[in-house]
Length: 397
Ligand SMILES: [Mg+2]
Image (cartoon, rainbow, N blue to C red; front, top):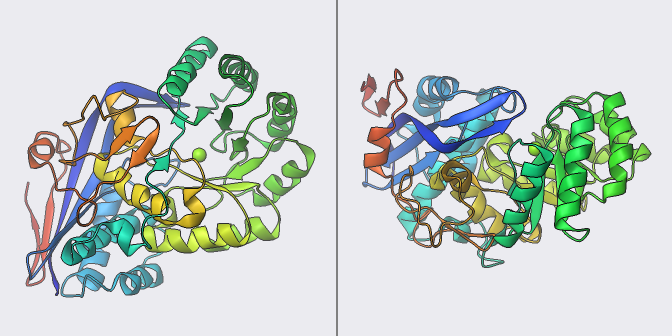
C-alpha cells in the first residue's frame, strides 16, 4: 500500500461560549485537518486541535507549509503508510521542532493503519487497560465565585478533579484557590495551572501561601526554559510541582528527572509530537515513577481521539486523571451522552459520560469526517491544499 494523496484543510470551529485564559479570549478553534489517502482507497484523518502561539508557537499556516513543502513530498507521498516509526524518525531527523505538525501526521497514519487492519487505534497501541479515561474539569477564567460555582457543577457532573488557571495576579490566584477549595471540600483534587507566567520570586511567595490548601499540584509555575528554577522551587515548597511547558522532548524529560525538578509531568500529544513519541515520553515518566496528566489543545472529537486511545491503552497513563475536554469546552457542556454533539469535525464524537471519556470503537479512531460541518466552517481566507504522488500541489480555494 502506498500513500497517493494528502489534503490539508484549515477549519475554524466556533465556540458556543468564549473560553477565557490570561491574555487570551478563545472564540474559534483554528485547526488543520489532515487527510491521507492510499492507492487501495484506505483513508486516514487527523485534526491538529487549536494552535496557540505561546504554547506551541505553531499556526494553521506553519503546519500546512511544513507538511506541504517538506513532510508530504519527502516522507509521505509514494511511501508505505504502515511504517509509522520510520516516518516519525525521518520527520525528527530532517524537520526540527514543529511537533504539532508532526503529531498531526502521526495521528492520521495511526487512523489509516487501524482502518486498514479493521482495528481501533487502542488495539495498535497495546489494547485496553481500562474502559475509559477518567477526566478532570478545567475551568475558564472567572471571579472566585464563578470558579467555585463551576467547580461544583463539574463535581456534580462526575469529574474527578478540578483545575483552574492562574489569572496572572497572584493575590487573586490565592483567593480563587481558597474559594474553590471551600466549595469542593478537602478531599477533591484541585490543580492550579500557571502556564509559566510567574517569576521565581512570585512563585516562591505564592506557593508558600497556597501550601495551606492541599493542592494536588501546581502546574508549570515558572517559564518553560527554567528547569533549574523548578528544581530549586520544589525544595522550598510543600505543594507538588508538575512540569508541562518545560517537558516537551525526551531530553527535557531527562533533565527534569536528573535535576529532580518535578513531582509529575503533563503531556499533550501535540507537544510530544504524536502517538509514537508520546509512548516513549510515557515510558520515561514511568521509569522515573512520575505521575502524568494529559490534556488537549482544545479541539474536535477527532482531535480528542488519539489521546483518548493512548490514555486508555497505556498502563502507566491509564491510572491517572486527565483533561481531554475539547468537544465539551467548544460546546459549553459537561457531557455528551445525553446532549449529543453533532456540530463537529468528527461525524462521531467520542462520548464523555459521568466524567469519563470513552474512545470510539470501530477501525482507526472510529471516525469519519463530517464533511458538511467542514464545508460550512472552512477558515476564511485560507486555502485547502491537495497534494498527490504524481503531480505537484493543487490549491483548491
Ligand atoms: Mg498546562
